[in-house]
Image 1 (tube, rainbow, N blue to C red):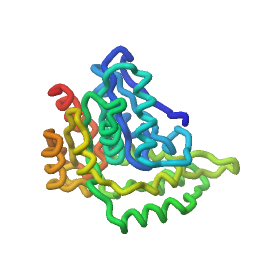
Image 2: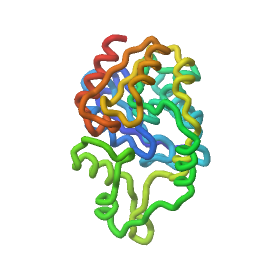
Image 3: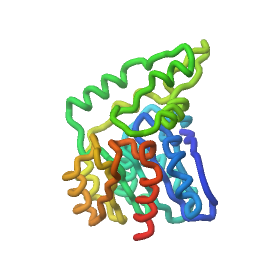
Length: 256
């Protein structure tokens, strides 16, 4: 599996790994990284089946974790990890496996659990063919964030959307990510958090439609971490409030 990676900053600085959400790509971090790159070597991979990384036959959380472990083995030094949404769950998985765990982990607006109805809907969506568009402009114009609530400037949404599609042999444009990634496993965040030993804290969008406040507080009790909240955002923190998100990341890392 060939993993595409974006980096910012000096490779001699402490490594900081940023993991994106489901059906996203590393470009989501382009507005966060500039606030971190002076102090850290910022590394943002496209997860398997996403962005410009290759597609795979399996998309279990352990598969994603193994990819990250292979990536950080090459660093051969301690690293910190920030994960948004599914990226945060993968971060918990990497930390729980204790193979190449991070020195510190910040999990942002992660789903706490998943109902059977939700899982069934995602698995059904994974079996469908993606939409095809005549032009890239058509594809970007019809692109929608999920969940749809957000406060992100449209130019940011359009910029990440532009990297979500690729030109096909017939000149039309289709989705770049592998829709099979949508067939996710059941999420059990509270259980997984109890298996993590590195310093772990959480951040949620104040108006989150994904991470309820009470469950977020439970997570911090489990990990003895801190819960940060960011005003004026629903879920897509890297797009909605990148400067504030970066400030929380810096504060968390400074306290480790």
